[in-house]
Length: 374
Image (cartoon, rainbow, N blue to C red):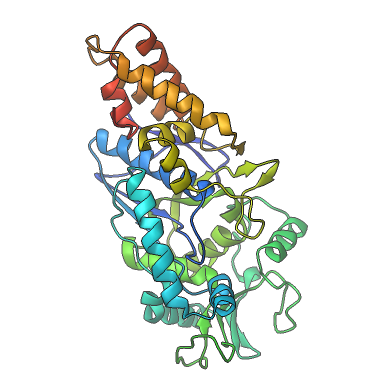
């Protein structure tokens, strides 16, 4: 028995092939504002995957980083007139409380980007030594053309990659770049931004290199599962792969797991737009079991829209499950296992529990595998 998941790079469903210890890296939040339902959907997906892997006898080590220095958090701290690390600490405390309340398993490690400056500098120097990076205008850039497999994770053509890079702050018009697709490894800090000394000059790291340094430090050269929201495929995960494999000479990720985006009123939830639904708001209306079920009712891989009735339906489902008390005989956990092994089909698992509960059969064991406490 094994879990089969869709792999973004291979564009198909494949079994997770791992040893007794499964290493997972989930891109975490940039803590400059409250975490929303889109974040929760990602981390809940990794949580359910871990639960099934542990059920199969594996030890799981899931790292979820904290991007506590980048353009977004520095901009927000500037607007609020606070120190960026104070802002990060406040938001991380809130985020951790919400994830704990939602019943997520504790992370193996939750490292901050600012903890990895030595590793980041070493990685950048290694890229320079291999001729895959260059210094220009006081910054260090990765030469995307130096990596033959650039584009193999996202399967985007050049025009699409340029558009996505621009959308995600890649500054494709930077005159210091040799090519618009090259990306920043190290950059000079503005006067009111944090700066670290380096042989490349004082400055701060680029976004992509932070995750590579943390992943390599915490979990080793090759990760079993890596992922996050679908919006991270390009440029973030593409660039992570290029710089990591250039430096190590080893495959960076065996299995890429990406979660669909959550929308509200026809638009992707995002902090910039302010169209957000927050976990703590939902937990004020219902217990964690119902909130988890509301999220698990949507398949992780596809984009979906949050509707107010999602929570109402989940509350009703959980009530029906709690009312069913007849002997289970292992049927509920067996049904959930079958669906989770099939590309984490949580909607199918919920439907199977509905059917058993409707017949009066207890579904506590199956629900527990989904992290739903009855």
